[in-house]
Structures are given as structure tokens and as C-alpha cells.
Amino acid sequence: MWLPSYATPSERLSRILVVAFAVAVMLFLIAPLFIIVPLSFSKDPFFTLPVREYSLRWYEDLFGNPRWFEAMINSAVAAVLTTILATTLGTLAALGIARPDFPYRRAIMALLISPMIVPIVIVAVGSYLFFGEFGLTNTRAGLVLAHTALATPFVVITVTATLSTYDTNLTRAANSLGASGLSAFFRVTLPNILPGVISGAIFAFATSFDEVVVALFLTAAEQRTLPVQMFSGIRDQINPTIMAAATMLLILSILLFAALALLTRKKAR
Amino acid sequence: MTSAQDSAPPAIQITGLNKWYGLLQVLHDVNLTVTQGERLVICGPSGSGKSTLIRTVNALEGFQSGEIKVAGLRLTREPAVVEEIRRRVGMVFQQFNLFPHLTVLENCALPLRLVRGLSAAEARDRTMHYLSKVRIPEQAAKYPAQLSGGQQQRVAIARAVAMQPEVMLFDEPTSALDPEMVKEVLDVMVALADEGMTMAVVTHEMGFARQVADRVIFMDAGRIVEQGPPTTFFTAPRSDRTKAFLRQVLH
Image (cartoon, rainbow over all chains, first blue to last red; front, side):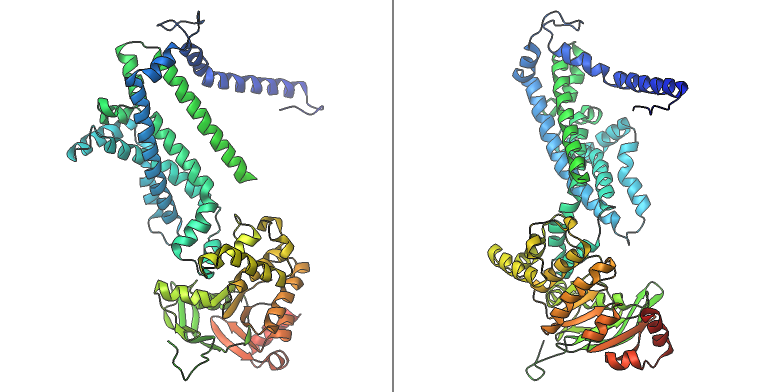
């Protein structure tokens, strides 16, 4: 950040410009968040800044109104189930792909990652039509399966990254000491790749919890998730409860991000 | 497996062993018998198949044809057989391979509890006994990353020996060590040999071979080229390849 004393004036100027630009970009990225949070505490039933009077009425609505509260519960349940499925499947896939004798590695990796690249609307329409055949539309199972497909690539990527630093000789050593394949995995491999598995799980949770497009297609009123509820809230009537919900999502994201940061710091130690 | 009349089968019996990596044959018709209590040193240039050979014994490497018996039990692909063979065979690796997420004590105690079925207290007592033998009991609570290479390798030896195997395999145990740490590891191995442990050691430490080995084997290009007791092996090698190799390692 700071320049040495022998920096020339033009170096100083360019450094100032770089810092100013970086600050501007960061403001651009987080400014919307700073607008949402105060609005969620406004007493007015319409969006106005600066806030004239503060109140918690929209938070009361968020937690008191069954439509909102159920949406939060639905989101949480779907996200937890998605996390469990995606983490398990993604870790298994990463372990398989990491084997030196794995055939068609690049093609299969590309296939596993594809849900991240394919436009989300296409995934949504595709799963709507496909799941319809099996009666999975308007069910929680359908939503969880579609979210699992979206979330698994994150787990595959993070676990693959951790596995590249894992020394497979440790598994050999465990085997040489008489450990079965399963116990070598749970006692030696898993503890050593755990940071990658947990980061993947956090990404999977966030993916499902935030996802709106697929959820719009696949849920009926009973499975409606929080982002869907927010979306219909915007469409039907401007309801500041959305701001309270957005703030809660924001806090959740910050918590997840903090957990991730803690995790990587521990790994680096 | 073991009938009454051959009450002491060889610790390791390898017959007609062949192994390929793809088209490359890395082991050519290897025959080798290690008797109980024997101390065998295997040497040879890198790529000669010596590490591969001892890794086939505890099924860390597969093989295409031939037969391996450990204390009379024939090695197959059956998981139950493989696990039983691995209980009989301890192994020390070039890169130590201590589990980085466990302390020294846990590294040794975990396999004792999971594989040997010892209670936590028994595993702890036995671990401390073997850590004392490798002269490192005071490091029990540390993690591997906090130890020097020589200390880590001594823990690795303690971890393998605490399982009370019938045979110990050493895969270049001092090759990854700084020179000043080689001796502390070799001393531990000499002490182990003096207790009568059956050992097969892949090493370039010819001083160790002279002092400890009952028999030295020279491998080249996947074949056993020459073998004999250290006195004749070092003073009167027959094959030219052995002579060339000995000139290089003995300077």
C-alpha cells in the first residue's frame, strides 16, 4: 500500500489513482447493501431515504407472518438437505476423479461442472419438464434434487483443489498399518481434506439458500422458499418485509463468509 | 494355512514374481525367501524395482503373476487376506508418512485401537513403550510438523513396530533425511535388528548393510542380480553390474 521514500511523483500519483479506483469499485459493489439495511428498519410502508423513523415492524412481519416464516423454514430445510446430498456426492466424485487411473477425467469433470455454466433458466425449464415426468414438480424432493445438481460443482471444485495437496502416501501408510479402505478414508483422508469439504458444503448451502429461478419453476405455495417469496413480494406489492428478509440473507452470507475465512486461516496455519 | 509339520514357514516367500506397468516390465521372475529372524538388505540403482518388490509384499502394489506368502499365508486379492497380511507386515516409508492431523501419540495409538482392538489406555501404554525404544517419548504430544525428519522417521518406526508385526519392511528409510539425522534412524534400526526382528531393508546405507545384514541382495532392471552375505558381497562381487554399483555407492 505505502510507497518507499524514493518513489517519484508520478509513481505517487499512479498509486493514489489505483487506490481511489479500488475504493470506488468496492463502494459500487457494496452500496446496494448499505441501502437495504437502513430501509429494513424504516417505519414507512414504502421505500424512502433517508429513513424518517426507525422500527422493527418488517422484522415482526418476517418472523410473525406465516407466509414469510414458512418460506424461511422451507429455504433452510431445502438448503440443509441440498448441502448433505451435494457434499456427499461431490466429495465422492472428487475422490474418484483424483485417482490417477480414472478414465476420461476431463470430459467427466466438464460434465460435473456444467450446471455452473449452463444458464440457470435452462436448468430450471429443463428440470421442470424432466421432473414433471416423475411427479417431482411442486415437491420438496424435486427442489432439493435440482439444487443438488447446482451445488455439487462447488463441492467437486473445492474438494479437488484440496485433494491436489493431499499426499496419497498417507492412505498407503494407513493401509500398511492394517486399515481397511473405509477406515483409512474416515480416519486419514477425510480429516486432511476436511477444509475443502467444509468450504464446498458452505458454498452448496449458499447456492441453495439464494437460488430463485429453479425454485420459481419447481415450487408451489407449500414449498415456497425465501427468495421466491421475496420475488413474488416485489411483483405483487412493494412490501418492505423484503428488505428485512434481504438483511437476514445478508447476515447469513456474512456469517458463511466469516466461517470460510476462519477455515482457510486455520488451513494456512 | 500352516500345517503342523512346517511349524516355522519362511517370513516371506516370493516365487516367480512378475510385474508390469503397462508394457514396462518392472519385476522379472523374482524368487526370494526371507527366513524368520533374517536381516535382508536390498540395494540397487534407482528404478531397479527394489521398492516395488517390497511394496508387493504387503499389497501396496499389485503383481501380474507369481506367488507371495507371508508366514505361510498366500497373498490374494481378497480384502480379508490383504488385511491379514498387512497385520503381519510393518512398513516404514521414505517420506515418513506420519498422519499430519494426529499427534505422535495418536499416530501410534490409532492403529493399535482400530486394527489390534486395544483399549485407549493399553494403546497409550504400548505407544509410550515403543516411543521410549526409539528414544523420543518426550515428543508424544507434538504434531509431526513440529519434529525433525529424523524424529519423524523414528516415530514412524515406532508406529509400525508397535503393531508387533512378524516382518518389518523399510523402503529407503534414510533417503529423505538430512545427513546429520541418518545415524539416529540407523541406530534405532540396528537396535531393532539386535532384538531379532525379521527385516527387509531397501537402502543405500552400505555401512548399515555390513553391520546388520545376514544377506545383501543386488537388484538391477527388475531382476535379482546377485546375493550373498555382506562379507563376500562387498569384498568379492561376481557380476560387473554389482561392481559398478558398489564403486558408485562406496566411492
